[in-house]
Length: 369
Image (cartoon, rainbow, N blue to C red; front, side, top):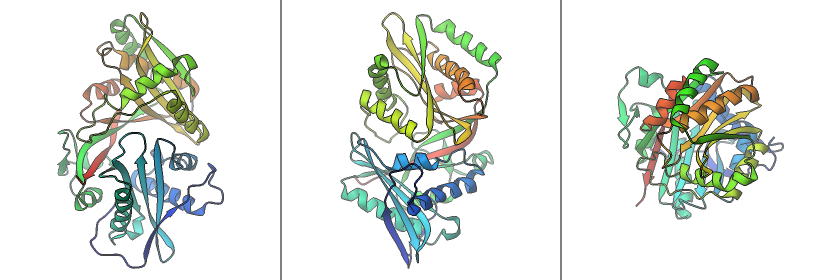
């Protein structure tokens, strides 16, 4: 979200665009313009593309799937592209919610364009029976470190700069700050001595557990159990007052995610912890990497299932995966992750590994009921 204005902008049109069928977006200038807006915004905000999806990722994601319908809009002023909007509509769970996002080119802000685009997104969502809208905004940590006044999240943990344009825009349009996530980065590779020390400490607590690793595709004999762990990821992590329903993962949904990553040029490394006596999967962690952006590894989900906590399994699987990532992706120089500020246990693991805060993400919600 970018800026706010109450005036109705003249000469502005907001239209939904077609998502191309090919990852290179050949013959799809509208979608390429959408992607370039994201690139320009990332460079403006962060000075790099570490947090920006590749073109292939954008194409594959915005095509949507059987679990979520996704739409992309472009805003034009007298024919020139000045902004974009996106709308996501969950189809399997959370079917009364919608995800919204607007972005205005830096040269065209504070003229009401963002407000107009948001109105279009919200009206389409309401037409589909959605009564709760979610939005996210990530920004660098520097203002928070400088001690600016913060708007505290309803979760009671963390805040965002009260004077930031994104904060003013969200509040102006009736959104409340539900949760704040810390964006952290880790210099890579991690020293083997540190990994060995952390692993040794975790192994003292994880008697009776072993680790299993794979790349890109979960073994067939584990996929059902892995899907059950993935389902827990949506219910066993802090979600503050966002009120989301748990996601129902099965083998087909796991295979869909793996295929989407593969087709968009993303490789993955997964490590799970298994209780040896029962062969029950107890924890997992995922790293992803893009050959198009070889310097960055993304730390995706990490979860320890209820009933298996307190055994050092979160650290155990993370250490194993980071060690293997050195061999898989030798060109990488950093690992990036996000954690809810109130998730102190996982943050403590990341801090022990050497992660350092670099940004934050505000998670906003607007409810009509």
